[in-house]
Image (cartoon, rainbow, N blue to C red; front, side, top):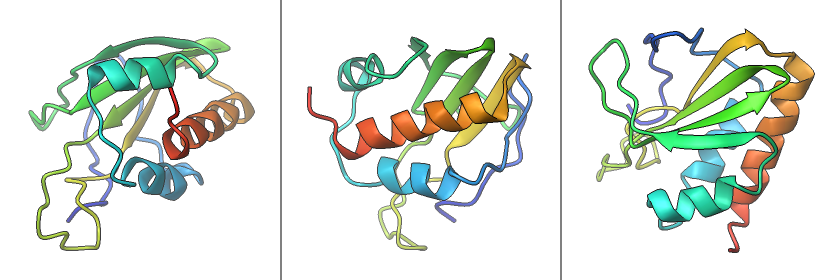
Length: 128
């Protein structure tokens, strides 16, 4: 199931969080834009608090396509972006699973929402 939220752990982070912006975030990611580490780094540098990209692995041994970490107030946000290899698009999406939203430390919900909105915007309009 492509956009199903996987309830899996990420070391040192709390989540996944079922946020009200998750559907919009999934839609923006699933828009078919060509993605690789170089493109994503350029895109995410436009978002406040961007720190780095990584290739995280969750408690179910799933190696995510990319993880993007952001400083959010006194805490951190890690967004896990899935592979898009559901070629049959069983639920209308090519995504293997939903994006994972994880936090560490003190992350205020308003600040988290602000960063997520910025990410959605740059994914929807990724002009370099």
